[in-house]
Length: 428
Image (tube, rainbow, N blue to C red; front, side):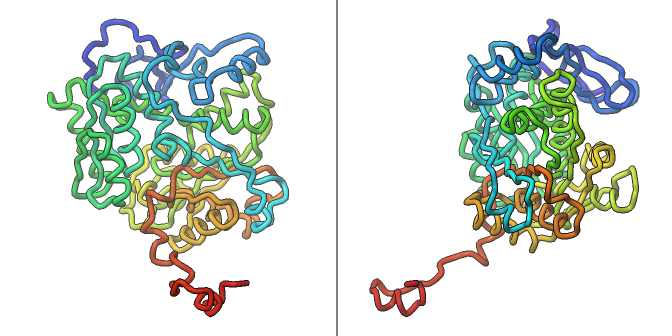
């Protein structure tokens, strides 16, 4: 079992409806604490809940009366009841954009929506998961917040730690996009570049967590991972609430570690169990970049094991060659009748521009992956254009300018005169 490194774990933490940690593989249960692996089978741990019982309509009203952020769902999350009163970045309840112009371009007739998480405080969905991890860090007495990151998470941890009054020390591959490096560093915490891939960074953090140096450190995606991962459920909650408490027919989700997709599925299942939405079929589609597509390759080959790869793609936020939740992504895609698909870097860039041109949303490269995969699957007939489809954009394109900079710029450069403007052919 992973070593507990909290300052104090002697008392039961106040994490709201969270009741225990449960192994996803064997079902063994453990007390709430900063651990992430089962002592019996080494499987991953996740939160088991005592979810609210009673009238679903009353719970809906309670949620709708809550703050316009993820804390409206506090009764369903591992956080204390007074979480909204504590210093946090308060992410969530981002726009669900009805993308009619993009739908017309792609031939979708059943309703196409973009869940645009670029509106979060540090402009990516990572603010959701880190906000939950901060509450766990407080509960377990941690004084330093840390992570291994492909960029967005580093910025989210830096901001959340600054807001909460914690020290931060985050680790990234040394070749990340400059925008993400600056955003991670600006909050005043320690930012450490590691020579190697994200998987190298992650291995280093796993070593650090077992060393005395890491005493009192909360690694949001290692020893706090069971709590951190629950933040992704709020995407499912929000999408359904914003659709009038209805599950969409098809959801396209980017895959890095795979945790986001698995928790979106968990969130949908919880809403069904609580009677907040109708129990109806839905398909979850996993999207990867071709240059880092181990889950897609396993799906297409009919395998249950995901073979690690060395990433080679402009989509650095999804460049995890050994995704921890890859096998669970395969299970969910197959169970829901979904697929796992990938697109080339060129298709990613085209999709970024398509979304920007049709809907005014500038997505980072991960958003280019989901839009690109949606386009590819519609053209091949895998996705049904008559069904309600939600596509996730998980970050802001200003973080990944290099992806489009070479092919995007001024339409013309002219002298400051009307004649020059007319000569450039821009007057009509």
